[in-house]
Length: 285
Image (tube, rainbow, N blue to C red):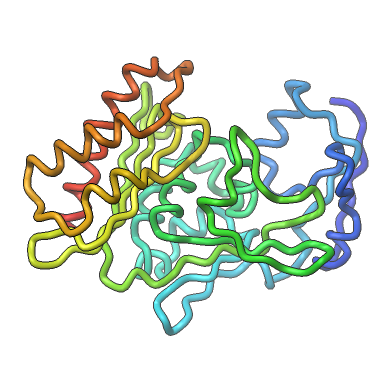
């Protein structure tokens, strides 16, 4: 690795002042699980890394407001989410998903904010958070703004964040009786990067889906919603024929891409099959 400067601010304001909106060689540093690999391979050569580890409890805690939602600091580690009783009560699909996210060594270091800011399409959390209607609060020189997770991801390993903005919190709204599930398909071990990740969140009553949110990742360039498939399901009585129709619609709607984990044709089949299974799992919860 080439030499670089490491700075360790004590406050959020100080951290923001150390970032450069015009210089991509200056980057914030959270858990570093992905960044270190990029640096070791020579894909990224920073001039300055701004460590966020000393910013205090303000962005390192999990809160469960009375409304039933979650407020998760950006520096909360994934292992903390996995073990949190508050998370399991408010949105158990998050904790369940993290059980097979990479491995425990990574989860003990990787942070929520870093995971989202890295925007790797093979991450498990983004489609889950999109299906749950989650948003991030980002801080910058002009103040803070709220960005839905589905709007945060701009493309392959790209977000809408400016170079001098930081994610400070993840907000998950109260699910109010909604049921959610995540289906992950890997070519090797359960903790491997997925060939497909599909998340669903449904509100159902009287044998029909009143509302559905569906998101896919890994098979596409970035995690994204499948709004046509959501519309197909709205207010329809649930039966096997509807679930098969939804699977076919999702396979046609998702802009799948080929990679080392499978061809585009293979991934379309995965989307069709596992969207149906994720819906069945959510409806049975």
